Image (cartoon, rainbow, N blue to C red):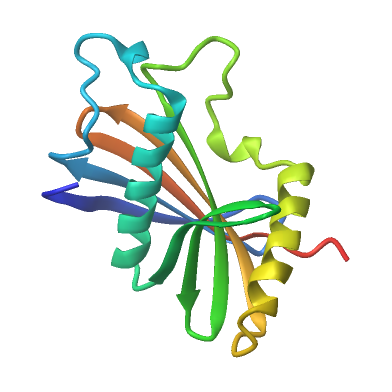
Length: 166
């Protein structure tokens, strides 16, 4: 993603919670998807990978250290594992392309992180932290990426999107 930059930052409160959402646009050459011809030419995996690239770039520019991407264990995968201060962040990235949306797709990506996905991330956090005793604080974040066109993506970053269901 060469020559990309973040523009138009807006910080808002997430309804009925104490979490903050950072809503920005990532603009510039190099998103790497050309929708001028056939929007359906890109697989959901390819669009998801580009969304993870955008999310990681955004997080780095916020000063968050990316530790691992696509961390896997026998239970599943975490899109991004990062560190902010002494806190480990397990980040789920949900990406949608406005041009590639089918009528049955959810246009608000963060709504795709339901209770089942949250429960899985909680178990993944336990596995990750059990092998890294130097960390004792974890936060679950969600990054929603909407790819608008070949050079623009809208990013919604929800810090502390949910908590342990214990």
